[in-house]
Image 1 (cartoon, one colour):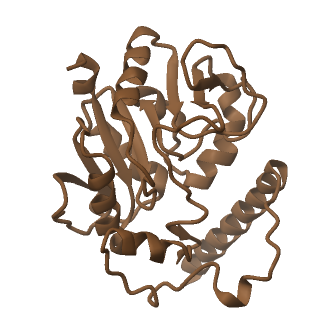
Image 2: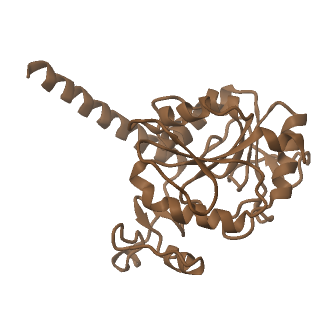
Length: 277
């Protein structure tokens, strides 16, 4: 066995609000990654969880907290040097390529400057440097250089990149702007080449707390029972004819800043109310 295999752990990031997603996550992950060689930890808040599909360690923060602080709390408790980071609704649509994961870990052992191998493609003016088969290098200034897609991270660098007060969207949008100050090497999978971890987050899983309609067919394949009426479907019939235009990165940044300002105003207003109670 490659020595680096003993230095890696799979972290599935979640929270109590999404506990109904845990069983499908681990059942599909177990079936599509049968030769996995790394322990798995579920990151959540207060809820306990006993998984019947694989051995899963549960990292409970003990209270509800923002994603960044929750992630850092978990990462501090992990001894392994490398983290395979997944979200709870990232369902592999085919077998996870264990052999190529081991190769990525070998490369990270050889080149300590590699911070991450993102296992999917991230669009941009990426550099085909030819150093690592199936991967291309992200430029120093690049949109979504920090992202929550399936990836192999060097744990100590990920801990450096995440800020305690961040949501996943903060990390991806605002964090990617500050990523230019780091000298680390960031790699992502080359588009249209076989991925190590193939998933389609826009089609399956959750979007704005609702199920993608194709998730019903996916769960049926694995004999997973789910009451879809509880959350409903994001792409419900009344929205099928609505054209959804994805905003540009700059539009996302502007919208995000406005949202954060609004959130701050609400917090300040609550503090003023408490002051006069």
